[in-house]
Image 1 (spheres, rainbow, N blue to C red):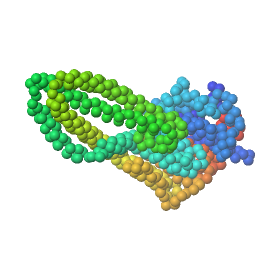
Image 2 (image 1 turned 180 degrees about the vertical axis):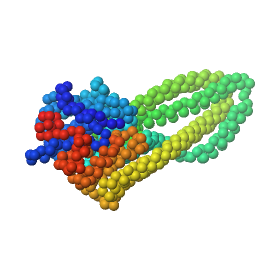
Image 3 (image 1 turned 60 degrees about the vertical axis):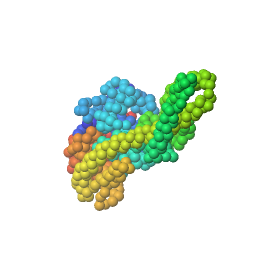
Image 4 (image 1 turned 90 degrees about the vertical axis):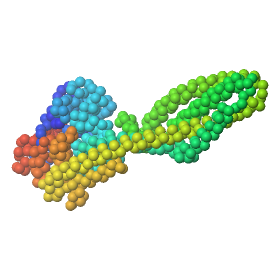
Length: 565
């Protein structure tokens, strides 16, 4: 990909058009014989407008960086006019695109454009993500990635690897560096987290099923119960009916058998209804006040990605959480109602059978005979219920064990794929260090190494820059940063990774002039774009004459400031 042009319009009239070059792109102030320093002409504005195109709030365009104090003339320029910023670029698919955004002091009022037509924000974001940043997943976000390529604040220029806000969570850096160095298993990590959560839940179910008896004990209970049932059935089969009552008693036996079977079925339905009732009650209790951070952690652990538009405030997280709970309750209630209908159906069948049973009782002339056979059937019914209950529990245990095994096998496959991705990541970092070490050695005589280590079990990254002169500051630190960012472009070109091939740096005046020259030389040989703003005094020497002749894309002055106001 390549940046081609940036254009700024005021009320549809062109204010400024900047053409980007391959290699070195310089933004400087015009040399002045007066005492003007060139610090307030808008050299940093181009980087901030690029950042605005990549979804920044744009506040840094009309405020001073140190105290965030509004710059009146710029604020008025934006507020009183329709300002439109448009970027023309070549995407990773080698097609040219135009994207634009109206510049306002209220980001929510921005209007987005793609190829000159008003676009939905989501379509704009998708295009930028894919064609500029090579990002097709939700994390890391465009805003997170953009900070690596647009270093337009003092903090970003002083921190080579930890350039995000100082409150940034470690997992954001993890996502960023895994993405930057070609780890394609971020979705696998989420799948693994989801499987871990499912396995954890099923293991809880399994523990509940095994209380108070494990399956080995349950299996041993069935044989004696079956033997007892067989004896009772034999007693029924061998029962000596009186001829005059044989028909009635046999009919009674059949009805009581059906009552026994229906009672077992009814008992199973009631067990399921009780389970659903407890589950619904528990979910309703959970739909209450919970700490927002705790909720966020719960969903991340479960592999649930919270939409980027969802604010991470306590209230919004609680609403999101309760909506998830509400959906689950709705599904359980639907199941509950179906089982309730089945319960009523069996209940009616039992009532009818009991009516038939009562009718036969009235015709039986010998109560002792009835009492004897009825007692045997009651005992058989109890035994059958016990066998059915144990069998159902054993089936649940075996089914749950099989499901856990299946989930564990899927997890093993994912872990194996993560391992392959981790190996590729290590190879990529090694290749990057070839370029990083060579450039840092060329600039300063010190070989720098980027040490990135990914623990796939903990899903955490550890990273640092290692060199023989620890903790460099000032100009040398910015030289380290230049080597890092230029090396990254060389690395992605070699690996053919779809990542931005431009970098934007601001204020390198405290870098030694000889190192500035070396950085410019390497940047000019780059299959990418190094866009840097600096004071013209820094490159006043004759050895910079060719760079000033060929690489200046924007020259500003007190009479020709960026917005021409």
